[in-house]
Image 1 (cartoon, rainbow, N blue to C red):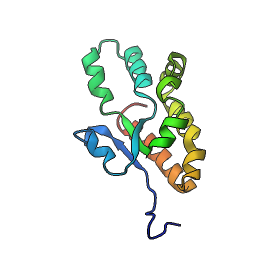
Image 2 (cartoon, rainbow, N blue to C red):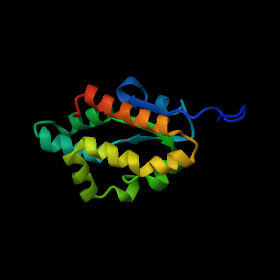
Image 3 (cartoon, rainbow, N blue to C red):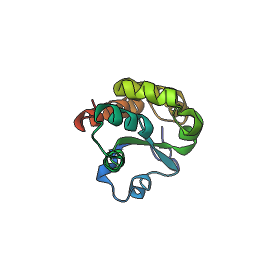
Length: 141
């Protein structure tokens, strides 16, 4: 239950195509990171395999608009399975082969820490559903 000094925690699930510049997305809720689920590298691998005719410039333009979620920075950095050096080529290939499953495993990896941070089960599951809906709406799967 939020207190007067602690506002209720909410998620922001967004497509970055609706925010310009990108910084506007993260000013809504700080200190946060924008976490692409699946990672941008996995999405790039998917695009390269599925649409080999796309140029690198076209791929980068598409990736800048990929579905994302704003999560607390410390959770992103410490527990995301695709943050920094944890996003190996093997992980990227696995995620690129099944984007829907990648969203599930990426979010499930951080879910216990989101719950520990004060988010409710309903909030996490709603964000999970919103991520899937956004991927479907934008044609990722």
